[in-house]
Image (cartoon, rainbow, N blue to C red; front, side, top):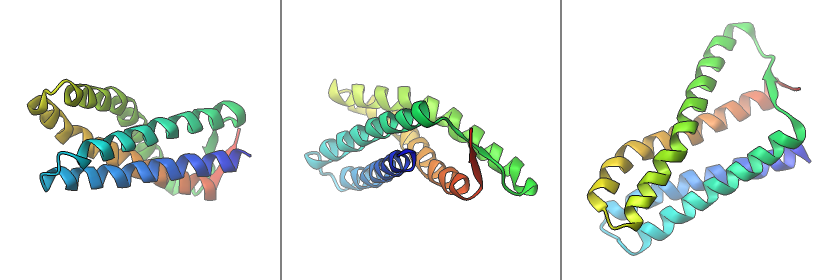
Length: 140
């Protein structure tokens, strides 16, 4: 069951990242109708990811890296960056969405330029970490 929850969570964050990129393309093309719809869908999928990830973590614990020792420092550096930026991404994304909903589009745009790369890094690094742990992880 833990692996199923992990697969669902990974799928949700992947779809969220894909929708995020689509949303950016839409607004660059001037599509002000579909951009907010797609971005809110991306945010919803990210929240669902968090629910499934925390459910998996709460029910089954965490995994620890037990792979090659020469890769451990790189893995831990990636993990540290992922955790710090994931924690920052929640308030950043919330602030960006809040400003969009309030019609503060200049502020929304300014903060979105920083938030989108953070969000994408968190999604991609999470996938890499998940793949590494699937191969070299040991459950607690």
